[in-house]
Length: 430
Image (cartoon, rainbow, N blue to C red; front, side, top):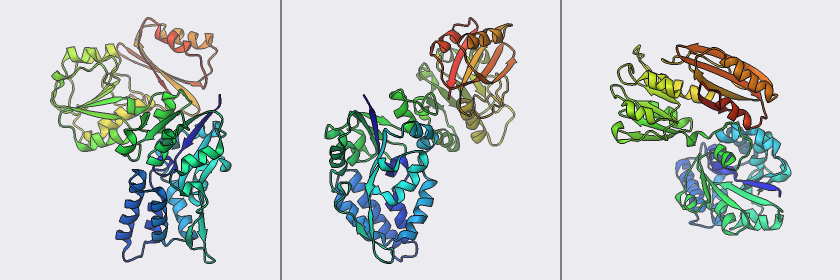
């Protein structure tokens, strides 16, 4: 059965509400600009949270805009730079599923079409409102016969379309949830990458902090193998705000802990530790999912490197007293998770890797004994895998192999790589 993906535009495909942005442009020199903007923002939020009808909100905002076609051209330029990061990195999905992706929005085609068609979304699959203009190209209103200008507009449109298949809805607002409430779609995913509305998330089938998460839970092709929001990053002690901000900005789920003795580390994926805090060996030994530790001081007396090596945990610290450790350490952790870089690590071979292009990246961490490379490549050969690039470095008892392979492989490949006797950890990156 065919699958369809109904995607909202404002605060979903883009990071912002387009009419709010248009008001900043059209009212730039208006003496009451700030007051009008706040009223437009209020009307937007009231409709998205279901407190007023969509028609009331839309009419009120359009009347306040005082905009024209030149303002719309400027808006398109602004919006092109504010596409949500997770949609931007999954551009290939839209090209590969151009028949199944529909943009359904209470916004306007005049600014939506120039943005989303660049991502391979078909113009005939864009459903939105349309402005009305006077002879001087000023916006005078909108097409009130369009169902998307009405309350329950998305429901009315979908009934008209009569799509034959399984339909998923992705959006941030109340009008998106109404599709689920109507019974017209299989599941509603509340998209929270840009804004989280409690009145919407508490009714959703699934909260998706980014588009990666949606693709992951539905087993669809995606730019990264594992959504970063699913990687738990534990902050231990008094860590600078800049460090925490950098990790949050990259999409990791951050949790806080003052006393590490009170926390089990079994499900932690990353850990950033303040200077002078000791990580007990018994706790560290439990951390089977831990991929990297950042320590904002000299870790030598505080973290057992032998345990890190045994579990394949990459350790970064500030043993040389770098002044910018609050930025340096989290960036090293991020580069390791995103690309596999171990540059400046204190326990792993130091490797800086090129970016991947149209390939999977497999990271094999193993005990450094002779013959491992031959075993790895024999498995690739037996599975008829095309190797795009390969890198190997060793340090002490650790071997670190990175292999970029052409897209498409049988899952049994991963099982066979894990079965190599000296394997410590295997990671898959897209």
